[in-house]
Length: 242
Image 1: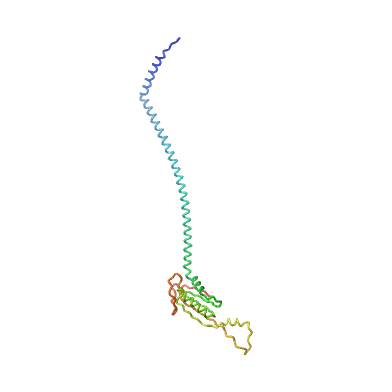
Image 2: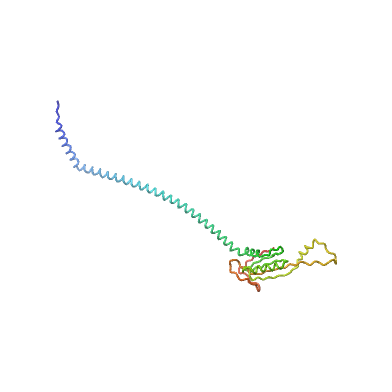
């Protein structure tokens, strides 16, 4: 039988192994290798941490960029709506200015004709033949067989709260030859010596001269003019004739 002394072999191995390990650890090459491995490990760890941090920052930057893009789109839509509102406001203001200009222009021909029409006698035999305006001077001509209607028209112009001032009227009676001829056209011609010839009807031709003050302008107290007033500075004219 073979006998082996395990105690001696283990002791010898342990003593030799520990010494060998100590010898290797204390070797400069081994120290440099361990230091190198440690530095490399730390470097890899730092690079990993930096990569993770950079990736997180990149993701955050992309999220912020997307949010900024969304805000930019919203601002673009708001700017577009603002531009449309400004355009609508400008159009509305242009319409308002046009209406104001139109209303201010109504102090001319339209307002004059409207003011005269409001004061005309509602009689079928009352006619206007001419309306002429030069500056503030207004001349109205016409005729009517009813002299009272002419007087009433003159009073309505004179008492117009300063709209028509310095009212001056000229009237003249004239025979209505044409009207008489038309009235006697269907009647038989009377024989010689039979009755008297029917008198010809008369009409009153009138001419009103006054000063017109447009609404909104300083008005004067109505007064009867002593003579023809001065002509307006603009020299514009409005003429309406039958």
